[in-house]
Image (cartoon, rainbow, N blue to C red; front, side, top):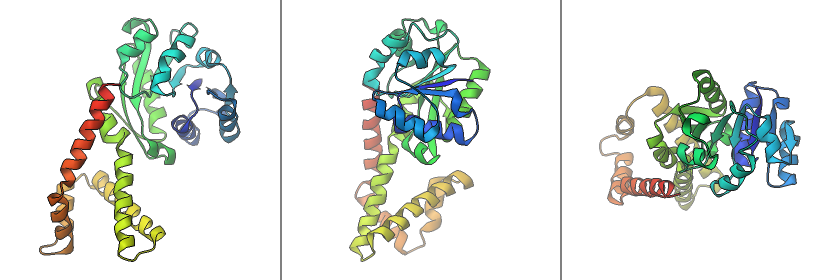
Length: 267
């Protein structure tokens, strides 16, 4: 299996790191290109993959081709490579807001003429804890879907969703690390205001978020039930929850996420 990457930024290299860490292919089986020579050289030095300075070379090489460039670059890149991509190559897009049909149109193909995968990973992939939503075009075979899931699970957790939920994935996981980072920063700021050294405050805040997320995933309990477990009658936690409710914490998160999804749909 030969894997190609057009674009070697943070997300692409996170995926490459996961693939290699899990031994899915050898470094020699991965080829990547990027906009600058320095970016290609950096990836080659870090992962011992094959570097290329021509997108068409990567496209012609790959059995699975990951398009990891900015969404606005897709039309130019696809126009450049569309005539050299092999018929059975599975093309994986990580562009938010860009549908399978949009991709097929850029390749000047009908849906039954090209194997397309649309996915939305997030930045925790950089530490092998990514969350990725994925949907498939009609021509992707079951065995190919299994391979795609292996690739995407190599740097975190991947879940198949209908394409009409892919923009929702952008809001709930693709962009949400930014919301969580803001929450951690705010908690740390409050701890600093109460006298805790900042480096220690970040440790406490980040570990609390990590542990809380793990409880949701491993216990399978409703988040509200887990929240109630922490809130003793007349205690400190319920007082903090009262203030969060008063100041519109839930509504702020929901409105921000809805704005994110609306932006994704309009891209």
